[in-house]
Length: 118
Image 1 (cartoon, rainbow, N blue to C red):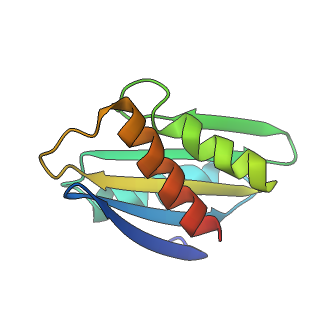
Image 2: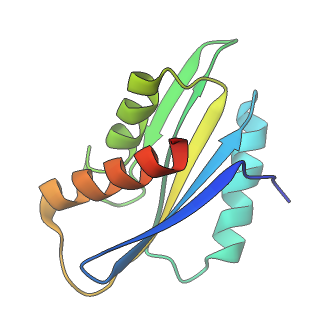
Image 3: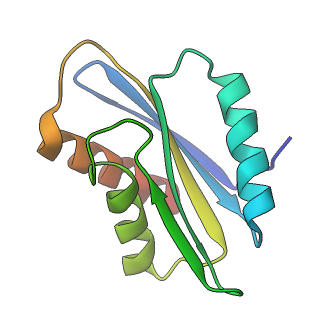
């Protein structure tokens, strides 16, 4: 079971966004945490994430079915602005029945990432 450094929850128009911060140094650690979250949140609509590793330098952003660039990219952008390295931020979304639109998704993923990194 991965040890998350911090967990937060926000609600946007009935959708629940759960943010998880994982301090890590390898892609294997990230994949293990992702698999754990998939088991724990089987009914989640999306599990989006982004990571930044120092050595070797690797960055990745994953939208997991959200419209392109509305989830993983905003997560990674917040991490880059805050200078966060050797970390992964996962955001688990439970759809609440109200579409947020591209702008709403970007704002929600940005907000939960900012909160989990604060």
